[in-house]
Length: 205
Image 1 (tube, rainbow, N blue to C red):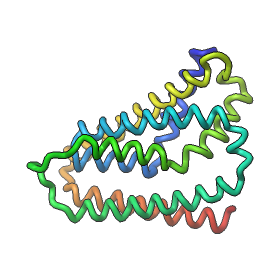
Image 2 (cartoon, one colour):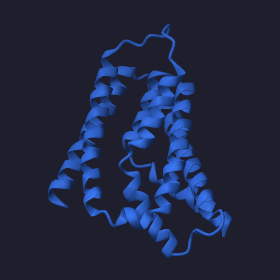
Image 3 (cartoon, helix red, strand yellow):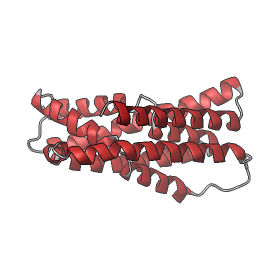
Image 4 (spheres, rainbow, N blue to C red):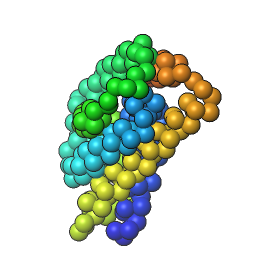
């Protein structure tokens, strides 16, 4: 049962980061603008925080699920995150690529930690999904169940984001897109996500 708990966590969180959002788009942006090494540092930092938050959320899933007003505010927080990331992407598009400038390691670590902490999607994702998995007995909370689940979730996030980083570099090299074009495209996606989230909050909540 512990092995199944671990495998389910890896799979569910891997799939959870496939839809475009602020995390995987930021991963692609870092891979393009700063290189694969900095992307790996960002992904590792984010996955570590993701694992810790997943553990806490699964431990207090019922409490979080009962806070409807709090979950509603998270939707608007997500709007702000999308807009901010879109503006940052546009700013990055205006900057010239400076190969001689040393990229600081702590910048990627700080970004990973900040986005790991202020990730509005993680609470509804695991409070709803985690409760469902427990109810269906696909995971266990006994013994080291939650610890293994958190580790599996971190690994799932890492693997998915790593593939996004590799894909971003492949697209850039294969089609010879400039970093400006890619950053502007990412900014456009962020703004579209913000519009979608605003529409969702105003019309469907």
